[in-house]
Image 1 (cartoon, rainbow, N blue to C red):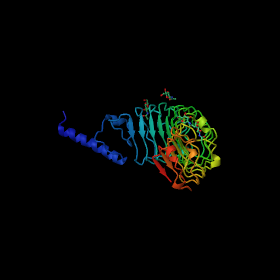
Image 2 (tube, protein in one colour):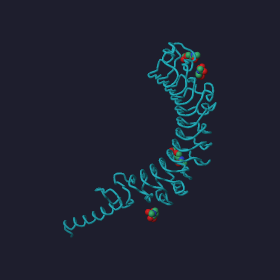
Image 3 (cartoon, protein in one colour):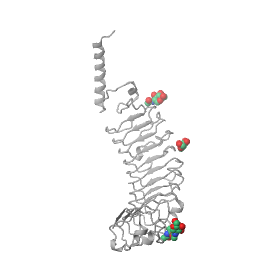
Image 4 (tube, protein in one colour):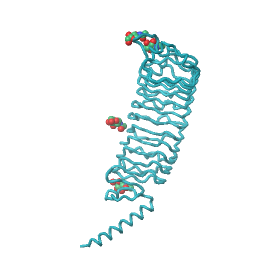
Amino acid sequence: NISDYQRLHIWVKVMNHFQWLSHLRGRRWHIGWQAEDVDCPLECDCPSAYPTAMYCHSRNLQHVPFVPSHIKYVYLQSNQITGIQHGVFDNATSLVWVVLFHNQLKSDKIGLNVFSKLKSLDRLFLDHNELTQVPPNLPKSITDLRLGHNKISKILPNTFEGMLNLTTLQLQANAIEDAGGVFKGLKSLTMLDMRKNQLRKFPDNLPERLQQLYLEFNNIESVPANFFNMHPKLQFLRLAQNKLTDKGLPASVFNVSRLVELDLSFNKLEKIPVVSRDLENLYLQANKIKEFSLSSFCSTIDMTNYSKLRMLRLDANEITAKDIPAEAAYCLRHLAYIDL
Ligand SMILES: *[C@@H]1O[C@H](CO)[C@@H](O)[C@H](O)[C@H]1NC(C)=O
Ligand SMILES: *[C@@H]1O[C@H](CO)[C@@H](O)[C@H](O)[C@H]1NC(C)=O
Ligand SMILES: *[C@@H]1O[C@H](CO)[C@@H](O)[C@H](O)[C@H]1NC(C)=O
Ligand SMILES: *[C@@H]1O[C@H](CO)[C@@H](O)[C@H](O)[C@H]1NC(C)=O
């Protein structure tokens, strides 16, 4: 029988050993250390309260630690990881989230099949890295893929093939000039973010289910003629900071009833385009608009036909409050905010 004193002594020795190790590895010491921790890489924390999570963020890691098989959620953000070596996820086939944003990942240092066995992967966050390509062989189970703030300039044709559950795709702040038809067949995609790229036109073959399309800060000059016929569910279209002119907008292209928000600010429009009476938010500031055309909002003016517009921004154009006709009060009766 060992005495309490001896027990304490052993415990202190064990403590010191682990404190020393964890100090060496820059790992935070957890008083709640338990047997589960044994199956956790020394660089990371696997709190017993969250037995399927592995926390390895913000600790100057330069590589991805081997992920044990019981882990579903792995947090590796804000490190200095440059690559993903073969096999690190091979045992962790039930991974659901892999969080790797704010690292220094390079495309040529990511193994060809590192993600391909993760049949349950739902979210893959690779934003704020140095990727020049979308990693190949991504699992078809992914619903939320974040690749913003990288250096991607080209997307290979079959990159997203078969990703039928993908609903959110973020590609903002890359260097994409032409996405080709890579989004074709993504039948669950509802949100596509391609802000801050170098697009000169709308991406081809956008999925029919799309509800939110963000294309601000590109070089787009026109809107395709039957765009809304092919994308009947689109509710939010943001095209600010492009090179749109009146000539680039087919007649009545925005007179579609699903649209809730339309951002056309910081372009080169001279006229207010015709919009649907169901539109609620219209941003037109910083264009070259010279006249206030009430017919853009209401084709006829009477007691029953009026616009649902709530927010209208027209500041930094070439019109003033005096240019707004009195009948606007009937047509724009829901307007809560107008900026001139
Ligand atoms: C991966 O899992 C297998 C089977 O459970 C196990 O034998 C092996 O040690 C694991 N690999 C690592 C590096 O933990
Ligand atoms: C897509 O989602 C459905 C429904 O959640 C699921 O049954 C199916 O297995 C998923 N497909 C893939 C490839 O994971
Ligand atoms: C916009 O579309 C509606 C419904 O299709 C139609 O009644 C209206 O005249 C159109 N507005 C203009 C200005 O073309
Ligand atoms: C005005 O509204 C009424 C009722 O909503 C509708 O029947 C009629 O077609 C509208 N007129 C025009 C010109 O849109």
